[in-house]
Amino acid sequence: MPLDPQAKAVLDRGAAAGLPPLHTLTPEQARANFALQTREVGPEVGKVENRNISGPAGDVGVRIYHPEGAGPFGALIWLHGGGWVLGDLDSTDCSCRHLTNRAGCVVVSVDYRLAPETKFPGNLEDCYAATEWVVANAASLDVDPSKIAVGGASAGANLAGGLALMARDKGGPGLVHQLLVYPVVGRDFDTESHLQNAEGFGLTRASMMWFWQHYLASDADGANPYAALDQANDLSGLPSALVITAEYDPLRTEGESYARMLDEAGIPVTSTRYDGMTHGFFSSPKTLDKGDQAIDEASAALRVAFGS
Image (cartoon, rainbow, N blue to C red; front, side):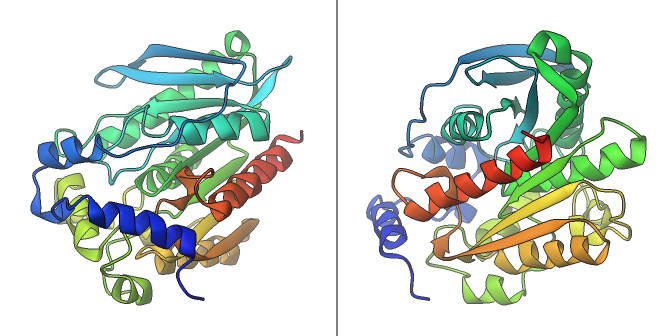
């Protein structure tokens, strides 16, 4: 379908800002521009707490969102997007607040280390450590340790998928669901959607190449399924998944391909394409009607996974 008018208005405002293309910038310059973006403010939740937990290379910051009411609750480990280079707890605050209220769960947002200062797998190891911490401290968090899900958007969804694989392989925390919102899946930049949506829709093909260059320490890491999910030979034993994609997103094809891979491995999976939408729409539920719908869909899937 044509580009949604609401999505087009968002793109027009971005173009009017006149910022240089991301792939022409240093990470520091890109972060400075990223910080200038206007973000929606999410709703009030029962309680929000910032904490530092012990990680593999020092403290890892987490922001813990509690819903109203009495637990124990299911918990969602949420990993922000930004191509592993950008993003923080504030940039994903709106999504976390909506998911907390609509899914009725505790959300633990992880401030993992960023590339290129920290290359793969350091970022993923921070996320895994945070997941182990939630399980170990479930009682004090008012969380049911048998109801833990992982999720994220874009590069955060890549980390969530890698975390699910790592937890299975290590016999680590048992997970009940993966919420993968327009996930980064691999390094094939010649997919149908990379070519169709290479420029003009926010996230570009050139930017994705730039992100991968900063994330990986070597080309060999690109063959590691914890980094590139499409390199996994065995997806059995993973938790159920919801994969959300956007029509005008370079990542659409790989996200839908990964959903098919999960389905072929016998994993219960729902794949939903939001027509007319662009990358990032999930974080703007006030501005974009379909962003609001996507958060509703994600929250409903979490409630089913948590049995609530």
